Length: 141
Length: 141
Image (cartoon, rainbow over all chains, first blue to last red; front, top):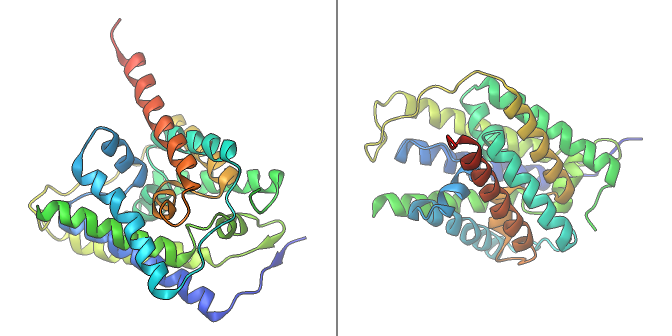
């Protein structure tokens, strides 16, 4: 039976504020450089040695570390076992390239561009991910 | 130089948003996907905040013929829904559900918790594997 976990106003505010920051970054990349901020595409460019893509990927942990240190956010500790992380990464990387985008490319930038492709992709990968969690259980182990 | 700084800055803001929202925390993401048991719906506010903010900035960007750094703006997205899109989204979703982490958050959290590097390694292999298969299947002989 579904229960909804207890959430405080701060939980919602942090979730929404984080989303707004993500949107500012995605919008900033479009206004500044005319580029869609799709992480899996940026990873592919970085693997080709493109410096600007590498710098975007370097910026990600810097920003996450800075905001975590400034606000005293708790560091995520519950990660899946290494084999499961590697397997998940393989599926995510291959699937994102085949389907032309991941969470950032389809569920943020694509939806913001009112792309029907991105809506279909977002609904599909959310359904698949929910199915895995339903079968394999909640918290990673 | 300005372009490289823009990518680094956008990456950092994106990463800050991912950390603030909890997208870097597999337990949080898995809770969002676990609609059948203890559901944590707060990441819907992250997605909403990100999509609305991106939409507004994309709207501002569309009114320009070129980006601030002089790039051509991307064409409107394709509306074609095909098997690659659906299949890719399914494979992506399976991986996302398996680990509770997707590409940008994995990079963002890598300094805070290096366990995420297992996922990053799989991700890089998956992206390169797709590129390799693409080259093999598209070669004329």
